Amino acid sequence: MTDKPENKPIEHIGRMIRAEIHTKATPQQAYEAWADPEKIAHWFPDRAEGKAEPGATITWIFDKFNYRIPYEVLIAQPDEKFAIRWNPPPGMNPGILEVIISKEGGETLVRLVNSGFREGAEWNDEFEGTDSGWRMALALLKHYLENYFGTARNSFLVMRPAEFSFEHVVPLQRTEAGLKKWLTKSGDYGEVGERYSLELQEGGKASGRILAKTNRETALSWDEIHGVLELKAFSMGPQKFLCVRGCGWGLPREKAGELEGQMERAVDRLAGALAANEARA
Image 1 (tube, one colour):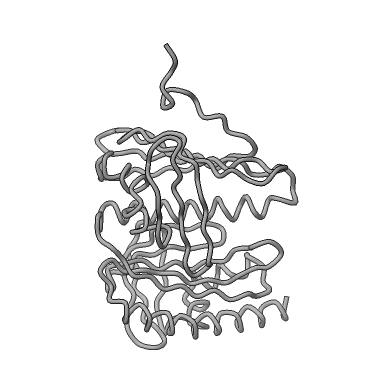
Image 2 (image 1 turned 135 degrees about the horizontal axis):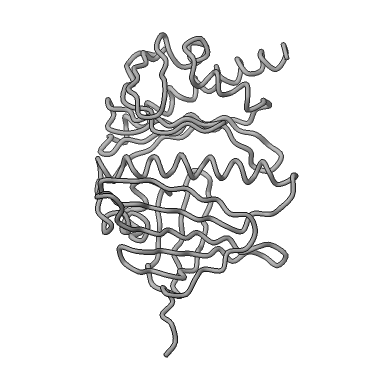
């Protein structure tokens, strides 16, 4: 008798990212949030197509990037495991994403393993940026599962190429003096899990809880729009980008557009503040 696919260990190649969350959601909800193309679009890509069946293809679609990522489904074991593989051009490692779901201490544990990253110091920035991105994404997944499961969202996204050092970005994301240079009139925030309140420069308020903090990015829940706000900085090849991304579950599309315009002006101010910092450094 041959083993079923879900009983065979995944053969990961290259460097691996490991991350996890505990959530009050059920294993079924956690599984559907990854394997159901409609539900994964509620918190991660803009859209998804395909079927969660071994051998089938699931495609994640990021509309604003004009980017489609097709994945081969390796394992689709409801409520327990979901694994997909990106099959690259020759000479590159396959990218494998494995999600393992289990019950632990009365909660649901969601463990993520993402492999295929290249070795060597020249690839450290790519690896660290993806690691940061997954930790942000899992924090959003937890917030979605526990508060908005099954609800569609509208999103806003602003990206701007800029020259900066990541160590100069973090104080502008997290200190009252830094935030006042581009985003807020007043307010700052503390540690993950704590509440925060910000008065925005162009009017309105953002308040909620700190969801995640990495060495280059920050994720906040945003109660006023029933959503989240991400303050991001990352590299795409040799180019670095500043980014503000957010969404609201049930947020009207028109309001998402207004917020995108507001954040475009904020990111312009952020780029100016960073340029001034870099000139003084």
